[in-house]
Amino acid sequence: TTEIYTLSLHDALPISHLIGTGELPYSLQTTFRLLHDAIRYVDHRSLGTTVISVCGECYHEAGANTVQELACMMASGVEYLNRLTDLGLSADAVARRVRFNIPVGMNFFMEIAKLRAARMLWSRITTDFGVQEEDARKMRAHVRTSWWHQTKYDPHVNMLRSTIEAMAGVIGGADSMYTAPFDEVAAAPGVFSKRIARNLQIVLREEAQLGRVADPAAGSYYIETLTNELAEHAWKLFGEIEKQGGYLAAATSGFIQESIEKTAEEKRGNISRRRDVIVGSNQYPNLGEKKLANGIRDTEQVQAQLRESLRHHRETRPAAAEEQAQALRQTLGGESGNLIAAMASALEAGVTVAEINDLLHNGGEDVPIVASLRPFRAAEDFEQLRDAVAVLQRKPTVFLATYGPGSWRRARATFASGFFGTAGLDIIDNAGFETPEDAATAAINAGADILVACSDDESYPDMIPRVMSVLETAGSDMS
Image (cartoon, rainbow, N blue to C red; front, side, top):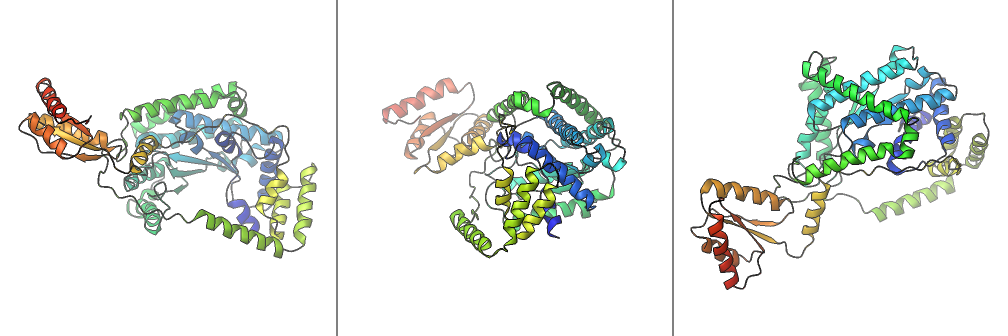
């Protein structure tokens, strides 16, 4: 029915929206009243849907570590429980309508342990809140493969990343899963990439048969130990957030954001120094890569079509739409009545979601504003460098002047090729030269912009002056 579709389309995630954007579209009073009424609405109709999403993606995509992800998710879950039980709902009623959206990254065993630790922590929290029903104490975990690890260049490697992440999600105990198409970042996902993403789950279920085991990681000493350690550290950080006065208070003071930003800077540093390898981006670039065709439609055309569709809808909708909009205004202004039921009636009468948002955006004084987390992808700094080179009329050319012992010159040529290749520069490699003068002359003839001496440490003191002498005699400005 329309009402089920409206509610099931996406769970509400106001806390994640707040930390991700810095503000909420509605006041706190309106926000939590909506959640309260949504739970009562689905309970009254016995709908088997969740209402609230505790989302870990905003922390994961901002560079948080695993402990921070777990602690923030638990703290936001507790914030929902506290606020909604204060409004008169039972802890059971709230807990059974909560779903956790958890991103899974590339650290295979760590991600398995993260999901297991999350279930342990949530069970402990719901038990402490006095949740009676066993089913309500269980975590409902929806997993998605990591956006943070996706790359725009060499995008087919993303299929391997998604395979690792999806397998970790299944073994960790996901109830449902979204596997991202490999070109989600590089271009608009096409038929092939969507099919691969879908078939990945089918292979794990039907061929790997991971769905036939209740808990595939049970009994593994390493995973069990890692799970317990994660749970212990996350519980400690969760306690620190609670000492701040709860999640919203900690976000308002900046405690959460500052902690995650510090971790994110450490990650950026490791990636920039290539201590953390991103295949195809900061290491092992595909020098002959051709970018995927961008299938994104003309946004102006799409917007024009939407405006025309909206205009036609407003002109042809029944007159009852304004009556239902007025009824929603009255419900919002009063303390009785169910906002979700009023919204469902308004939608069925033809009131648009945008118009409902305008009604709910009442400019209350308790609209929170906090510092937002900035999402970024691991490879984006290297991608920006490569994009800047790609728009140049002529790419700089790097000439590898290989000279001396074969093992040393080959090793250093390989390193230099990977180093400059991450910026998308043109690389001219060579088998080796008999003399430094031959190498310098070949570089000049090739019209290279950069010459890289690739030899052994003992040969450099003799090689470099001889190369520079040839370049200076030829009047070359090669660097």
